[in-house]
Amino acid sequence: MEDTRNYIEQTQARARAIEGKDLSPQEMAERFAKSGFNDRVDILDRLDRDLAASGELSIREATELRQYLGALRGTHHALRKVDR
Image 1 (tube, rainbow, N blue to C red):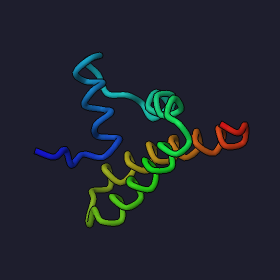
Image 2: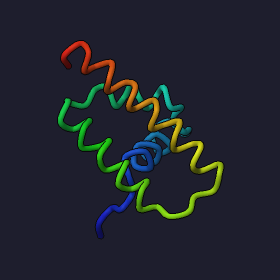
Image 3: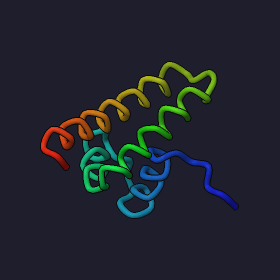
């Protein structure tokens, strides 16, 4: 069976299983920073496609998703500035 969860959902599920708690946007961005450049680009592209295809989200879900996306994008752009 194929896993249809996005990066944020997969990362949160692993954190809950291992650490017993959800990650904050900053904690997730720290883990995201360990990914290579091409992997980060792929993750962000897939998240953008998932967001566009998600249809209607509750205000809470949309706000939470935007917080995580903002942290991931900010980390990616900061790493790009230092050629990483």
